Length: 321
Image (cartoon, rainbow, N blue to C red):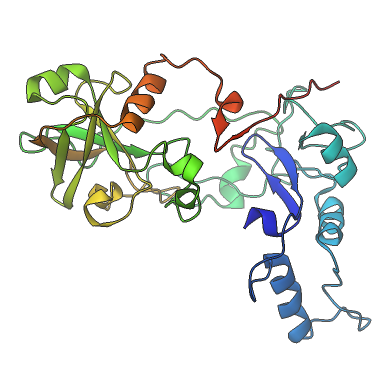
């Protein structure tokens, strides 16, 4: 997908990268930009003067529009150009007259976008999720200072028990993205984590008589999982970790997630599922599980960006000036 279209992507660290089209989409597939413009044209959206509401011909036209829309806001792109992004590799917003090559750190002037007429929302109650009104915010307006809001610790709604004594944490591995619809098709990536596995602390593994390579079962009130064991101290005693990328039947880690949600973000309790763990059968460690174990144990010190994948290797990062 990423090689079939041109456009910018903004990362969580505010870095804006420019993706350049490398190949044409297969068959009748089209980029989201082309679909967006086509829909606007077919619906005949117009400006007041009769001109097309969406006049874009190229993704760069949409980027120019965003530069103008974002000017003066916290995520200011007004000083950013395709040429600058290509020159620097990535540019962090804000990028404007004050920060012509992007802003490495925010709030160095100790001024925050918390004034009542600057903020985009008035916050929420952490316990209930209820949104504050403007009248509520008037009483607490910090006028440009930062908020530091303490909260009371609350017990997880789904604690462990005698029947389910372990806490299951689901998460990512570096080689896969979401449910592997793309990364599983890459031999270079998939061969490094082709199957689901469970990370178990050595103390727990010793008590359960589980060794690396054994086939292990996880059970909970919500389902059953099975996969290969990896004995490593990246998890604490009483906790186990399983990647969520594998979604087929007994491979799915998030089937054990409870229905409880955070009242503000509505995020499920993905890091606190009570489960039971037991060995199903003895096993012999395959090369990929031993290689992954070496990574987690810091026995493999080669930088990830310098590793070879499918006879290709990343080029050294150029020093920015």
